[in-house]
Length: 251
Image (tube, rainbow, N blue to C red):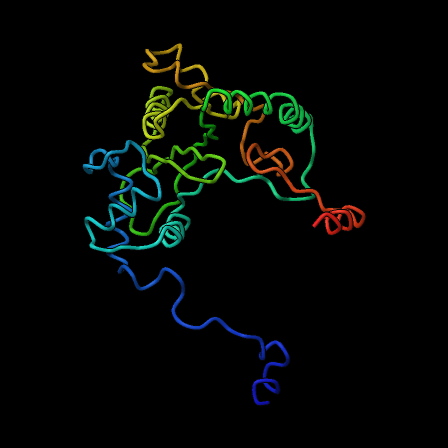
């Protein structure tokens, strides 16, 4: 009754208990060491067997250098706090639909299904490439850093932190590392921003370029992709009442 009188019905709702998820496992100094380790070198330079960082590689680094075994969810929480986030679809229902969005919708309906069929036929992994500046961390010394990243359909993020300027050769080295880590050919979806690596195979020897197929998306910024045209997760249409009734009858 005392809580109701002071805060009303809202005060009676259950409140989270215990410490916030993901806190208390590392001190601030240890988190800073971990962040610096991920930003300053690649997993291969840390004597791991991969070229790019991912959730699993960071967990292995924690276990070896800090003696700490954590869940993938905890590492994902820290990655989001540090800005290690892959491209996200635009979820604003009131977003403006211009000519670029119309071209993107046509690409989604006509070209993307062909890419997916090719991937299934040839056992190829499909990734969405992005490049973004990292948020500045407290007490950071030195130039701003950029994250090159690629995310697949299930949401696995592969990334590498580099210091600008980022050249086409830097991006191509990242894609070669991605192809090597996944162990098979890759199809990389990327926006039509002029700095992206779609032409870098012509600028220098691409190495295993036959295992890396670049597919441009008709949009200049991945954040402009509406969720209806998101290349991985299709929006599920709400079932009508007759459809629910038929489904219940079959079950």
